[in-house]
Length: 64
Image 1 (tube, rainbow, N blue to C red):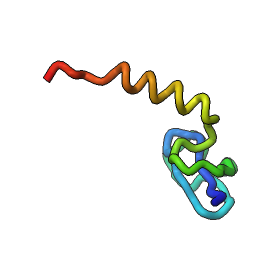
Image 2 (cartoon, rainbow, N blue to C red):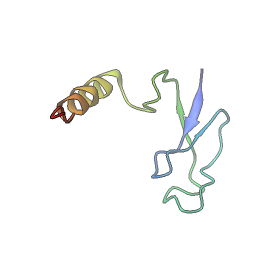
Image 3 (cartoon, one colour):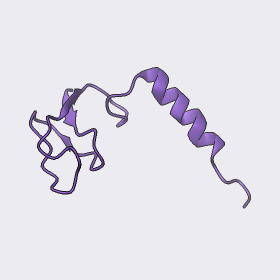
């Protein structure tokens, strides 16, 4: 399902097109980006998501 996200620091998400409404976001009043993702990693390609997952797993502190 298409949704729309802000690529700024607020990372806001909407089910309708529009502009960023967060007053403190550097993308305030800029158009939201359309997205079809189902994993919550808005606007990124599947390859980018896999690379991030590997990086995230490499940064896990397993010293417990």
